[in-house]
Each structure stands twice: as C-alpha cells, then as structure tokens.
Length: 239
Image (cartoon, rainbow, N blue to C red; front, top):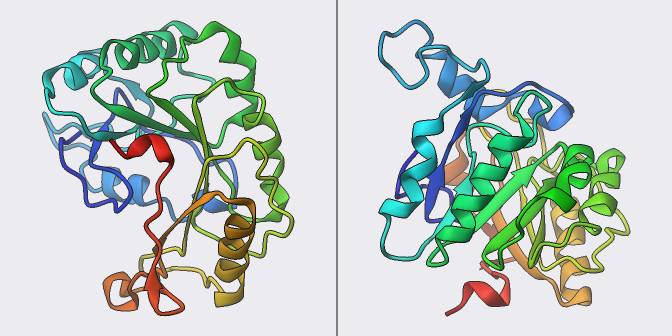
C-alpha cells in the first residue's frame, strides 16, 4: 500500500485485501504472487503469509489520511471480489470510497460474476470506477456483466493481452487499458492485437491507455504504439 505507484495509469495503491487465487490464463505469471511469495515466512512483513488470502481491516482507513486527491488503484495485490472475501468487508471498502470524495478509486476484478451478484448491495459513489480484466477473446463475457453494473466509470483492462479480441463490446465503457505481459516468462503480445484494441476505442470514442509492450526488459520495450504514447483517461479524471 502506497500513496505513490509506478503503475502508469494510477497514482497510489490501496490493499485492504492481500492474496488471491488464479482463475484464468492472465493469472499465470501474476506479478503480485511473485512479489508476495518472496517474503513468505519473514516475521512481521506485510506478506509474511505469502500470497495466501488475508483481510487487512487496519488498511481500510488509509485513504482517509491522504488529503490531496489522487487516483487510487484498489487491491493491486489482490481481487476484492473473491468468493472468500465477505460481502460485509466489500461493503466497508465501498463505504470508505464514498467517504473520500477527494480521490478517484479504480477497482479491477476478474470475478465479474460476483461483482454483478453484489452490485445492488454496494454503495456506488460517483468516484468509484469499476473495471474487469479481459486477456483474450474467451473472457469477453466479463464485459457483458460489467455493463450491467451502475458505476459512474466502467473500464476494461486488456493486460496482459494474450490474443486478439475482435468486436470488443464498448457500449457503456469509458476507458480501456491495454498492455503486454512483463517478466522473465512473458508471453508475446502481437502488435496487431494492440492496434486492433486501439482502433476499436478510437472508433467508439472510448479513452485508450497503452501501458506497455512488456517482455523481459519492459522498460526498454517502451510504451509507444505507432510512434506515440496513448495516455487517454476518462473525462472525470480531468479536474
């Protein structure tokens, strides 16, 4: 948890839940798991239990301490909508977001089914952005469920992009993040897959953010897609 982040599309991270379980191909080389397991068994470390699921009630209060407004990525090291996370704990996290209107909260999940099942029982403040991860065409159905959620901003993360995604359903979607996988076992992202996502967003008038090419040397690969950086954000993120 930090009031600063190296993730290009956010300012800070907030992790009231730690740990997760793999549910689809995009999870195979999970950066959060790799990081967490390095500290398994280290007494007193936040990840002493490695990547095992853990609720962190003491962390719920953290955004209240940040006076200046920022973009906050919720659970960069987990997934708030795991089945094992009690509904009441999720509601407490949403209550904190309501109480911190100075921030914009970016919630991202692969558990679109549970998201939709709980949507009517959550407090959807206007500063809550809700997104789903979609790594290839087989998981495009997550977007259909997201479109039924009453969030002010709905977004899609196609990272890591592991295959072509044609006819991306963008109705009611405000933002798309795309990027390749990084790390020593990074899987390939073909340029034509990224271009297709970008072109679909441009045609639909949806903000497009290209995060990275990825690969073993992520920083050397850069963030430029066809000679420019794509850093578009939803309209509410401005001002």
